[in-house]
Image 1: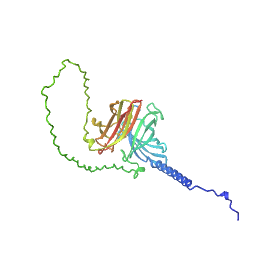
Image 2: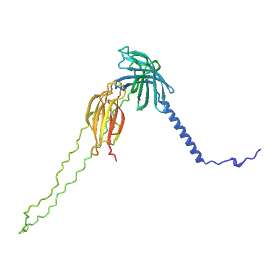
Image 3: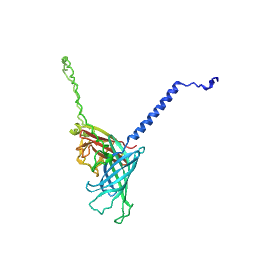
Image 4: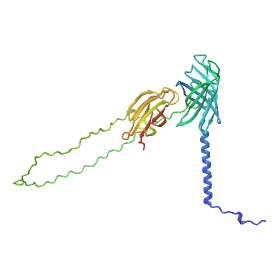
Length: 374
């Protein structure tokens, strides 16, 4: 038998071994979590909203797609109503790591227009996928080209472009395609249960301290001949500073609709320009969402309907008036609950986008703070 060589044996530190094992376990968990997050995002379903052309024409837009790996396929509807519309087949790619989707219409399969001589255009969309709570969005730009020759245009010629906004929904304005049946699950809106009122602690009344009778002092004896006091009759002018009246801060009572609903702080925006412009749009399909807006508990917009045209508010801020609170109230939920809106805030060169969701039980609050630039 060959003799053992002592140089072949190396002594290992137990602490070092445990450290190496923990490192590889942490690395494995990180890879597993990242892989599961990427795979969890799936575009399969119904997406509905609208697109706006370069000429500011607004059309409704719906796509029904099925994702298989990174590839997607399905159909699209471009329409003003469900009577006048164009339906096309589509294909595309979804990049999970970059959260980008490229969707191209292949050809028109159904066309219903008031003018039968109208030429159809097929679209190519580049979307950015975003998720806010339970809501999922596809937002981006599109280009289009003519599908056929006619009316002085050639097949493949430029048909215009614009922006498109879609939100994932559970119903279709037309009908659900066979490849989506039994795969679209309705989203349940969470029910907010009112919490029981908190018990008020009894107010402790301080015990009355015994009243002590004042000690009687002996009377002061007046001198018989009081000293003569000379009075200076010269008039001396005394400087008195002017009285400055300070206007007390206005106390605005909290409206009932803010007191009775829960108020969720959505965003705190710090601006460095005193002039702030707020624009509020319907986020997704224009489905009749109606809101009221309170600024520092004052009603500034009452029962206004959200559309593709913005509702505009202006704020003037300074170092003495450096904080404002805007509360958005859902007057209804439209035809597609909940009430959702897109708020764009512009302050000088700063620009913010805030997506807001409100219900009949919950208000959305956005706080503005002014910070003077150094």
